[in-house]
Length: 238
Image (cartoon, rainbow, N blue to C red; front, side, top):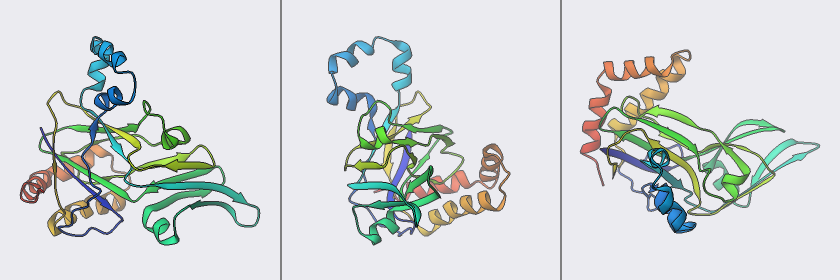
């Protein structure tokens, strides 16, 4: 099954731009065999239940280095700072909740996926990998039909400690594609048409707040957006 993907940095969509930091997701089981005791995973392959879970389970890595610190100033309240400059902070982070004990942070590192067939994709914490990000945050999970909706996925997390030290290539979260078919990733670049389709998904969601995902999927497919997006993607692969 072909799954089209794109990575970009920042809210602004730049048509036709390819990011050098873009990389397709890696299979979790393959990465674990490299970084842990390979013989353990070879034996684990004999467990059908385990292998069913690992089927089409991929990981997404950090594209850069950044240290995040959270502290409370008696005069200013809760604050989040990084070891990078203000421009980097403004371009890279979006703070959803800015309270002392409820720091919800999102990266403006956007991964967009769209499938040629009806398929759901789950986003979950990288709980089998140990690094500062996985140990000191709660990565917010979710599930999306990536054939019936066209929007970006970005790391959203809650801070569990006062410091998170993220390194380039650290696993950040997992993607589970709920299909038995083999996944074939194809990178795409944004066009004005694709940006308009993505914007429409955002506009509908915020205009009609009480619509559940199934109703949104029906709106998307009723207008044949799934066919229009796929046609445009096929013409704009890297």
